[in-house]
Length: 321
Ligand code: PBG
Image (cartoon, rainbow, N blue to C red; front, side):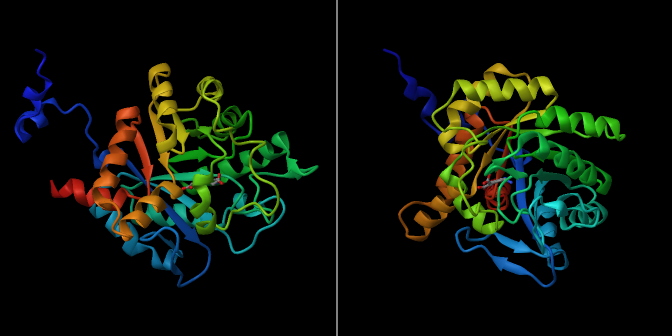
């Protein structure tokens, strides 16, 4: 008889045959940085996650570095918004200040910026609006300005998340033409129009004031189209391909892993975080175990990099072992 249980008998043998391991090296920790002073605000639907102004963020960064988390992903929340999100390319904007602050005070920390407009536009959409919809090509022009401004501030990697067609080609070309040929791009390649972003939109003040994002983010029904999106980004020169959200899209992560010779990232989004936190708070699940099992499943699906609000907590668990 086949006896698979022989290799499950003790912790020792289970360790030897373990196929997938999550490591703190896999983590990117998102940070919400708000323009202003003396801000340290808990996000209600994301227990443990806060918005910080730069004068209050050192404690958080000290902790990230002490836990040996290699990278952070920055989101900026500006004091003023407008139709086009012009603050995104202000060389003295909140994102640019944040990049300079972190690179100066925490030089070993790898800084990635989310490159988008929704936190910066008065209407909350990810670009310029024409005829009640986001204008793809006009948005790309502003995207180039934003990316160059982040590059000049000293960012280590940019991650465009707006799902405009031609984004990666535009970003690559703009960076190459301005002396930043060595700056890598992590593409939000396969990003779905997902209800799992709910808590984030509270966190970043970025909910659209009209309509939804279905004309630019992908339909959750589509798997083949995900391959198409990833192929374009791969060909346009993305260095890392990302799938977002993670848990309901593990099949897509595996598709990318099997088909592209690039590091694959996934984004364990706000709603996924909130669900675990809420159920754990009620005592309905063991929050720590479910957190670790979820992260493991993303790794097993094929993610080399996991962007997660759990990074600090999971790092503590991993460092304990
Ligand atoms: C867009 C962006 C979003 C998230 C990351 N970048 C929101 C959206 O597309 O509506 C969501 C992240 C999360 O839910 O944790 N700038």
